[in-house]
Image 1 (cartoon, rainbow, N blue to C red):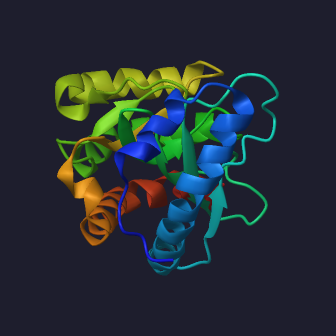
Image 2: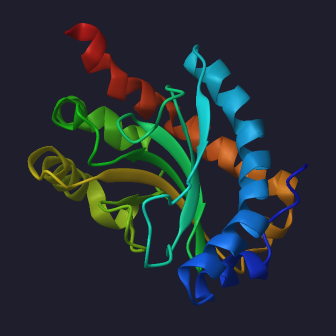
Length: 213
């Protein structure tokens, strides 16, 4: 299918009571759109990466009681999974879409990646556009703009990512559920592509320490 945009019912999915009912709505409303978005993005990101990347769509398979508060697609360099690798995400909470380059706590090389970013802090600071946002926990809605964080705040966020076992580092954009761009599939896809292209030097930098070992 062709992605034609998100609508209010997609966001209202996360107000549906009950695990089974909400999961059914995610599967019917959102997953086909993720498949269409992912099919478009995966090929383009693979070209940028110079190697094949793979699409993963969240299954929430471990959930037995609590309904998910968000859902997402991820694109990473392994067919087997994405959580242990730097990866790109597009997903929804009930009030916004998130577009992330994500380094989450399962990442085995997180200390080395954080160290590499900290050693290149001036470069990292310049690479991140001023209207992008940072999150330190993918489970939470909250984020902070890179502009309000400042370079010192970015440094502290990366130090926490390095030193705290469960700490994470996600960088990208949020789009509010009522933003008109979400109604236009082509415009939204272009917006996501521009976001990931801007973040690609940071993605590449995260792999440099592995090559240098």
